[in-house]
Length: 331
Picture 1 (cartoon, one colour):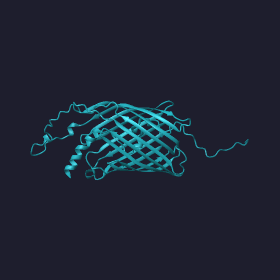
Picture 2: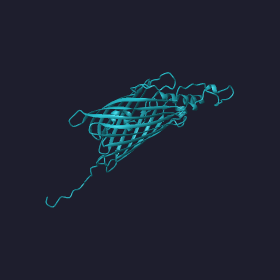
Picture 3: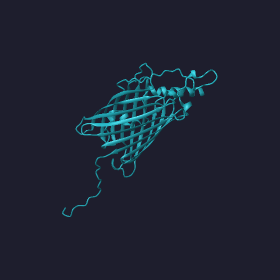
């Protein structure tokens, strides 16, 4: 058992290097999912924060957080996203700061059908603490001596690259509670070099395909199934599941919305995800937990990771709801 645990402790950070980060609440980090999602919301300005803590029972916890803001204008939508990810004993760190730009094309006179196109561009920084690694040459035949030289010659312990991605999304919007959205995005178009030795190791393209559907079942309940397929190099991932949303009394529109959400998701060959959420007017808070089902179960003991998503939408002007009007005497 100890040998298997040691194997996974060494292997996980290298897998993290080979792939981009991912989120369990993938629909609640829309700009990261697809730059065409920039400005795709009801309101004027949207703020989103995400935090993920995973593999705490295996090694040094892997922690990721991101913040984003996007805004609508008359002709274009624009946004910014920044994330920080740290993984493994070597504290392999990725920091990325990007800007996004999108435009919506109306395909029908009533705007029921629309097509969004988006682009994301920015800077990616990767860094690893090579002093935190231990190697077999530090074993002198009797004991392990961390003071012995490793004989490893790292060319550099950090990389800075430019990142570029594109995305598109088709939307069929009947109303706020009935819609269908299908999107596709492609990242790492510049194929940046992420190797820490002299050999070039280009980061693979990352494809995302997303499908979101919302169906109003009655005045109180919505069903929200969705799917995301991601592929990067030889790795691929399917996230499939659904949420149900229950509207509390007094939820008449977006300005008075009060709703509870519960979700179940499956990440292929990796984890089952349980999620709870709450919407209150302009705010949304979602909590999720990954139950690991992969071959790493002996080490993680089925414990995956905790994730939180927070969203706030700002409206430039909120129309005041008037339930009763007083008629003038002369009418």
